[in-house]
Amino acid sequence: MRKGLITMVALLLAGAMLFASAAPETQETEGPIELKFWSLFTGGDGEFFNAMIDNFNASQDEIHMTNDMVRFDDYYTRLTTALAAGTAPDVIVLHQARLINYVPSGVLLPLDDYVSEEMLTDFQTAPLEACRMDGKLYAIPFDVHPIVMYSNKALLEEAGITELPQTAEEFVEAAKKVKETTGQWGSLIDNTTGTYKAYTLTRLFVSLVNQQGGSMLTDDYSAAAFNNEYGYNALVWLQELLNEGVNPNELDYDAAMNMFRLGEGAFYFNGVWATGTMEQAEGLDFVASPLPPFMGKSAAWTDSHTFAIPVQKDQDPAKIEAAIKFMDWMTANADQWALAGNIPTRNSVLEGEAFNALPYRADYAAAVSTVVANPPTPAWGEIYETMSDLLESAVTKNEDPQTALDGMESTVNEIISHY
Image 1: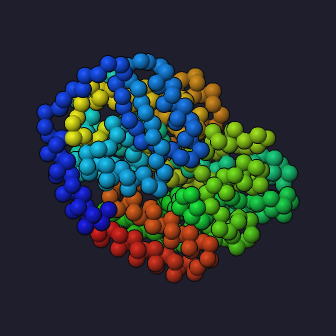
Image 2 (image 1 turned 45 degrees about the vertical axis):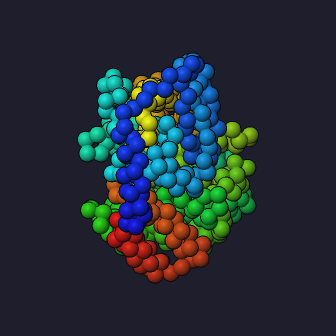
Image 3 (image 1 turned 60 degrees about the vertical axis):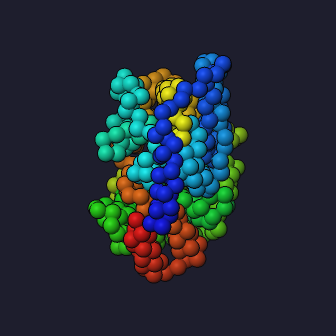
């Protein structure tokens, strides 16, 4: 949000907080406590989340959760408005990287007085601590979801490729060999806005810069730090895949996923949330693996879904307690969420039989130690969105790499100046 928008939201919040500061009233009703939730899970993981909600409701009769789907691109705009007005649902999902945009405004309820120590000690330290700001816990981590590489085993076998590529050069050569041998695409990286922006380009760019020892922003998050050899190498490689004819141009997110599911490409990149969808594709023989260290060390973009409780005009203690029970159940049964491909955050789930019986997920969990955390600055959300647009233009239009990087740097620095 820019300064003007922040000022407007702050004024709205001031009014909302006056209502919220009034003595809470406990709503006495017969039957289960009714809770509302807004879901942004509109991708391949949506059906798995909806199934979890159904399972939660069926597991007990004290609480009933109603889940409303919100289009991903509209979610944060709608949520920001509702939070400012004090009319948000009882439980919300936030990407961990977005917490910093909301906590300073006082729209999220600190959870320290409501969550038991027994529950908290079951969480992995890193994702839990990422939900704290100024010593207070504002959210509960639901998952960790890094970007990974999916590979079509049948196409690789047909092309005579016996080992997955581990360097940028090996990947290009393998993709070319697949295209020449099988006639199918060697690589399926979406690069054009469709249902979603070209987020995969940003996720890969962030990963590749970090694999070389670089970072997107300076240590104090005050300026762009990718306009150098690290950013240049990353951008040139993404362009090379199109220039070599091994990756389609103007390929959007949905098309890329569907083409891989239909066996029309050898390598595909997405978050772990796509795994469950791939497993449901009839006849698809694939492997999912941590993002290879294409440009040096292992490093992969990641984010985390978290649950939070909004401050309401009339905060009902009974609903707070019910919301905590919901978050406890969802995270404690996250082996069901792992069916979509996501990595749970509770040790009891990670060590459990159900999770470890699933293919690929244990490898993901091991790779969490090398994931790239999002910069803890309120500017990052806008930077992330904008970089997706700029990288789309640079890659699909084959712009001069240095000119494109100069423009990206200037734009990112301009964004940061408004926070």
